[in-house]
Length: 497
Image (cartoon, rainbow, N blue to C red; front, side, top):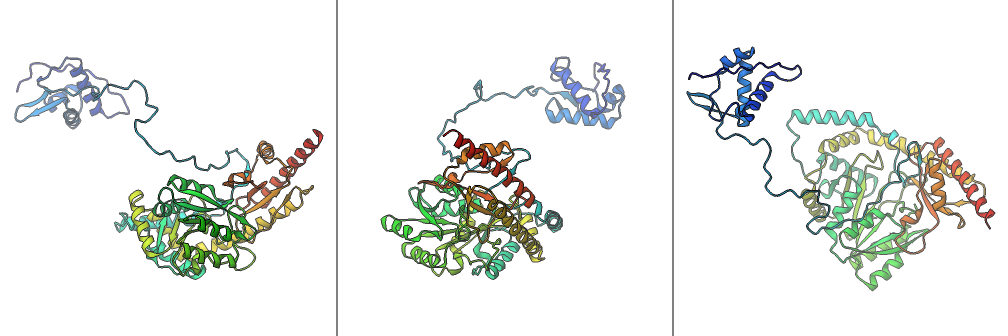
């Protein structure tokens, strides 16, 4: 078909952008401004390539781009024409614009309470956290190598698809062997569900157990993130006192006699935050009580590996003949918080239901990471790391204890825990921990007053001082600053009386 006109395009092509795109934009602009009307026939690709001084392939690509965008249409045997139905230059709104962002939702929803946040980050500060490991000790290079090896191998074998919601079978097998041999449990891979850390394990467990209005007994003082999870699900919290022998089981029994208790959450190995270990006699009493009243025990064994003076006491779950204990733990405290691998074990039917729930909110975990960790367990690398970290944390615990003992003025007292990753340090009653906390922050040392760990009742004038993430030299400097603040604080208090 004879075209009645020449394009008379004289473009100057810019470097750094495909020429065919510049041609397509040029023609689209001419259509928008009305020079090229709908139905107008365009030159063939050979002809326009000659006019523009480009090769024919470039012209073909430009036309294909315009056809795809709707600016041109091709008619068989006739050629290429400006489309009779031009595309809109801007999207058409399906409703009037609101004019400004909507701040309040137009529907009801449930707002969870603000999660517990770590202390505000201060660059270069030494932080007495609540007991987290030192990521500087983690076998990062070995883990990265294992992750890369697993990723490449599974990719070649087309094994990067969906897996069991319970988690990677090799890691569940490795954990089952560890729990049975080292912690006295009786598990199978089918009775273990992997999660992204302890908090996810706790949420899934609570979601299956609890209905709104159910009573959950918790240690007081205790672990606030667990309380927030139970509250989100509509549970009522009932605090049970903790003393130097752990949870006061007699108080729990009195509570069970007054009202139905659906579950008990506790940390019996190194109680959070006080670090005391639940005595054997109370463990026996607690298991019998739970069976008698139908109480599910959620046992959070968050730092079992770090026990320094004698063989660690086995978990409650190892002596559970009634199937009342749900055991939760994690590899995060062993390696690093960023490694989100937790797990739940308990009665097989419960764990199977947990896997079905997990599939609804998180189809599966990081199966490549899980396989890499399983490989490191099987190769003995995790055990070697545990021995190194165990020795280092033992040294750091003693370094912190020695530094605190050398503080003048009898400001603090504490019971040296048999293990764990923190000390529970109680200050003299005349020490205002809020003021001390503020002054220490100015000196780039961070502590958190222990009042945050109490659900009700008078709070001890205490601080949970995590030592695992600080070297002995860092611990010594931090305690030196603490001593200076305490002396300044008490001298200032005396001068105002």
